Length: 474
Image 1: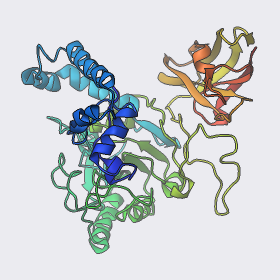
Image 2: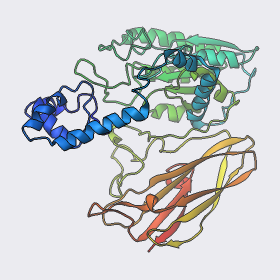
Image 3: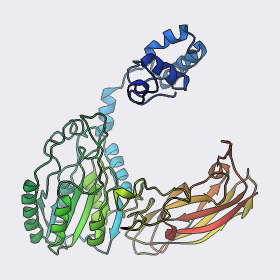
């Protein structure tokens, strides 16, 4: 089924102004291939009238109806149209579901920087300060339900730290002042910020707590008010900056200036421009909105019970002025530096550190030349050169070096997660076929053009992290 987004068909007449009324919007939308209007069918209820006028074909309506009915039959909705609420509750509360949520969190957290401070040793520190607006709250993100149980970063660290360690807390700053109902706060139209004076008082208190501690875990980022969909003039969600807001930058600087070792834990739904943190903080963890097991997963990684393995699925810019910024840009883009800074990302797509190290070697092709309909295997050896077992996500990128239309400098075409013990090596194999090499050419034909293709394998999309070999397609 081809469906519209919320009010997408209706917006043809009241937002995009390519149709004069709802009737015309229905005609344009349906004849463009949109078979189902979400959410209420305000325009498509006029389809019978359009069929009678000959502006919409009866056969196209019949096809759409047939597809809807077939989909419902395949889903079993005629036999069992309703959710089994009891079963849904059992699944949500089941220990296996919680274990799955924890595993997802373990594998999604990304270590962005580590100058040797992590992992922390249990019972090494007499006092750990957990500071920040994201320390005791678990932000779930918009369109997320409220779980039956959830573990905050503070609680997770307190549980993990050891009997000889005292874990202390300071709020640091408040992000917004009317986000008091975690499940519903992203729906509230108005966003109310605390005054700078109020936050500066909290920062002063946080500095006092930091000075008492041996190490600081500083949790900053965004709640659901600050990272959400904008759907009306009365419900804004976009921002003109990717910097930390609500005096969080001042909080970070004040805590860093105490001279205590600091780990920054980010809780956010989009990339942030954290240039000061990258330069001045020895360890940075990207925790996103990590779900109900946030605190447990974060503590497992902080204390080394789990080796971080997550990789970034988005590029982090240094400034919002670099946006749009993505790894698969065209060759003529991102060529020149800016007057005030270079044009490189803060963190590259596919980037993510580990507590161990991995060496890539001997990238080779099974065949250096294939026909346009053929395939070839590419292999690379990956070795764990560190002292800790860990997972590595091996990434395959491909570039069509010369083509009839401009193509990206690289495209992710595959990845594999492998687990390696210390000093262990594995050979990772990818098979490259027409589906990895084809694109829509100058005539909009999906085809493989003969020529040179650059095959790249490595730990991120950054050129320095990739081994490269050439594949000739005839």
